[in-house]
Length: 74
Picture (cartoon, helix red, strand yellow):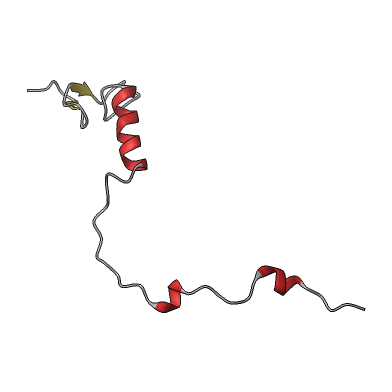
């Protein structure tokens, strides 16, 4: 069993502590960076209900920003 405040590193499974651990809940900077990289590469995903995309959100407006700023000439 782990000492009070002890736990397993979620990446490598080594015992680590929460108190005075700047990498918590990880055991090392390496494991912390591995976890960050997995999130950045979208290896982890938060479960969510699929929402069908509507055409309203997928179509882009036909006017451009440049056209909105054009002023009539003299």
